[in-house]
Image: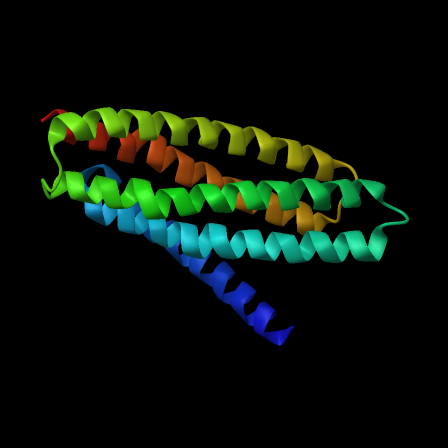
Length: 183
């Protein structure tokens, strides 16, 4: 348990410190490879650890309050489904999309084939982003009235990180990668 608390403290400290420095960065000017690295780092740290932390909090809240708060049991099941699906999504990005985008910038792939593949891939990932956003809104709604304040706060914090990640991928990375594939 002590190890989890230490990791959670590190996660919180890194999140607070990175938020300030990220505001100064011009992500639009980053090379695609660097932007991919940044997004992968955030997936591992913020989203990966955030998912683990939320899972522990929800599991603990549901276990300790299942008789008084049946909504927490529903939240636990819905979160487990979200976590499984979103983890698979992050794996797909890390193993397929990000490496492919890095190759684009290094001219390691033929542009015509790359453009078609990238259009298909980004459309698929953007659809998954939309679904993740919708699902997380449902999770937040489940937690709205029948949840502990600490858990609601962590859900909101995670959702903010999720929105930042989705925004940078959909509005910065994918359009820039598509532009490179057209060049």
